[in-house]
Length: 93
Image 1 (cartoon, rainbow, N blue to C red):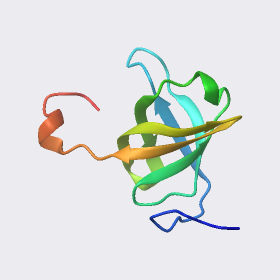
Image 2 (cartoon, rainbow, N blue to C red; image 1 turned 90 degrees about the horizontal axis):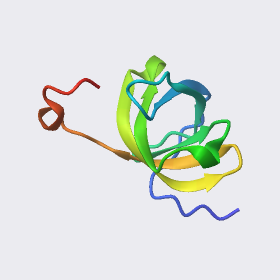
Image 3 (cartoon, rainbow, N blue to C red; image 1 turned 45 degrees about the vertical axis):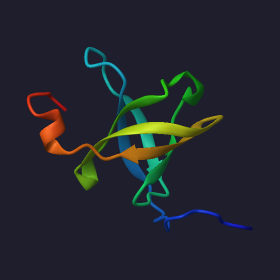
């Protein structure tokens, strides 16, 4: 199978939490195929997720803003938007 990815992916199966609204509990997901710039997420009701959200992977001490680039049944592919700490100073992440 042809692979046109820019970054190599690391296969993994890690618990992930999706935060779409600060007043709502997180949406549980599984993180798969993590690269430096993106992640594939398995999540129920993937088609109902907003285009951008905060993603947390507690085991990797990861919490970043992501944007959906590919959406399918039960999974989404997201690109990571790295946010510098100075740009979110004073904001709770």
